[in-house]
Length: 144
Image 1 (tube, helix red, strand yellow):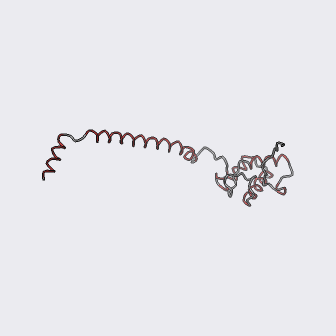
Image 2 (cartoon, rainbow, N blue to C red):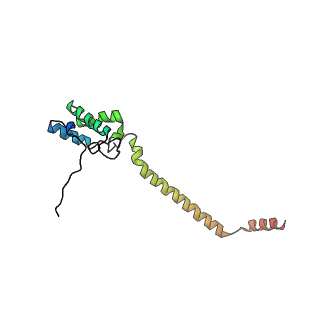
Image 3 (cartoon, rainbow, N blue to C red):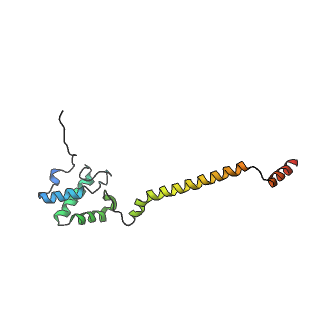
């Protein structure tokens, strides 16, 4: 039994590819970081969706126009929002998203700690029984 070395099948069609190998390599480099807006967790090179094809063509068009890799990504982010990036930046409003998980964990542990402390205090108070004053009041109420 032989070992089969395969690469993932790319959805890039021959008519999309650039004739300049260096530009095509740049297009592939940029595309691997761009999310297919239809498929969500696939990059645009792996997706067969029509929108992914449009994005691949747009990336190649911008590269041929002379944009750098970052300029191509910035253009797409300006047009489609940061969701188009498979790895969103860690700046601006995204800090809230990156920090939400740890903050929720800390808040949950704090709430659990307060709950457990109150429960143990309530159990200790219940076990102590009635005070002499409370017993006298109870006897008075039961007589009536």
